Length: 333
Image (cartoon, rainbow, N blue to C red; front, side, top):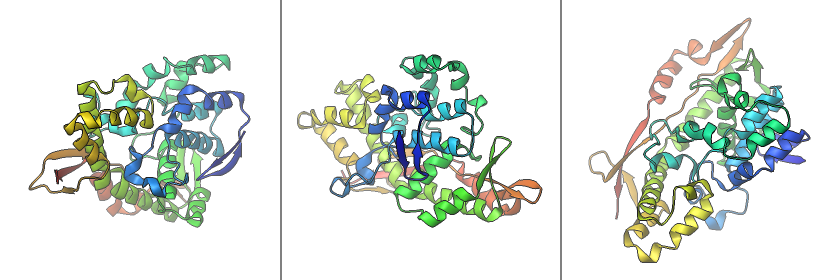
């Protein structure tokens, strides 16, 4: 199988277990789940000519390819490939819909990951090729794949580079520079020097400010969350529907728009048909966004250091950016 990734280029995928997982129903569903949350917020339909592939599937395969590119063992590559299969429609918007979600942590998907996977065909595929499912599902076994903020991990590296490339924040030359200066040592992602580590850290900060925890995401999380929660309460959609695709859920909601004035208003809000501003002094709803920041490791002579050890100001940025951001939204209607 030939696969072309937006960040890492062209690969031939031959490993039977990887090929079977890629073709499995849980992975294929991710092709219709937007990585950022709600596609119409980030790209206008008339401007969408197929170039915007910001799906959970592209990210999942990207994590697998990144781990493979830097020599991670096959079991860690497998864990990377399946790590997002429990995402609902509209990705982290689910944390603003269900009471079990957390606006500040956005961890609903992580909390149900193991139980979700065990209900799919993935365990059978894992067993077929002689791997242990419980081992694959335990993040502690795979430090390159997953680490807590502000450390780097394959998941974090891929989603940041994907976001940066798709939204024009990273040109080909800089992308190559970052990847060429990235390596792994003792199960840690390590840049070859301070300059490249700081450059990546600054890129990630911009992505967090403008995208992950920015005003546009706050509006998306609140409006999509409000619309889906209301649709659930009215019985227009079911909780099971949330684990289908963005398009299917949107289609079901659209079928009730002409029958419910409040639903129509909530749908307009999440589709940019209503002016919304951030005003702490006069607001209709508040919303938290999980905030992300990295403090990369890099090699300096015989030592491994963090960016914040060389640039103390970065330590202040890390402390500030790890706190959830709160917005206060005023709706025109």
